Length: 168
Image 1 (cartoon, one colour):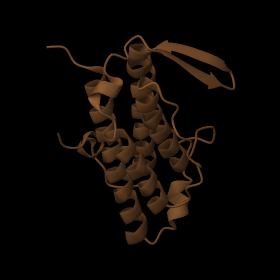
Image 2 (cartoon, rainbow, N blue to C red; image 1 turned 180 degrees about the vertical axis):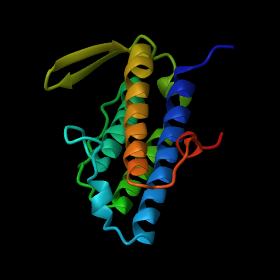
Image 3 (cartoon, rainbow, N blue to C red; image 1 turned 60 degrees about the vertical axis):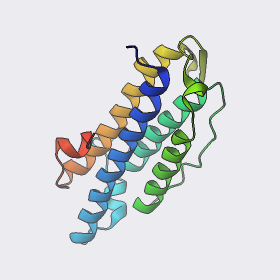
């Protein structure tokens, strides 16, 4: 049995974002329990030249949202990237999860060879649909989700591998 583009995209990304939401919830609880201003955690970086927690979540959600829309041949909606609280990040994740769940398999299946062009400041990136999903989107979503996890773990939030992976 083969696996479809839809199955490789939507359920996988929904799970990654759902798990990231749970990790953020633990971060918010940690801040509240220890009377740490939430913005301290939200603006924490692993190193000075990396993005802070807020931006890690924004990029992960943008990647996930962009995948479904582009594979379906649609332009992804833009988001404001103006979140400043855990609650606003949770709302952003929930919004993107709802968008992902709105796609039907027939909108994404068959997109393996769809031409995907990303317009970046550094120049255009060209992909076939399957390569875009497997070699660009999924690694990027996991990178930014794991970086968000690492930021929170690094400031003492009690997290384990099961928090990142979630439950099947």
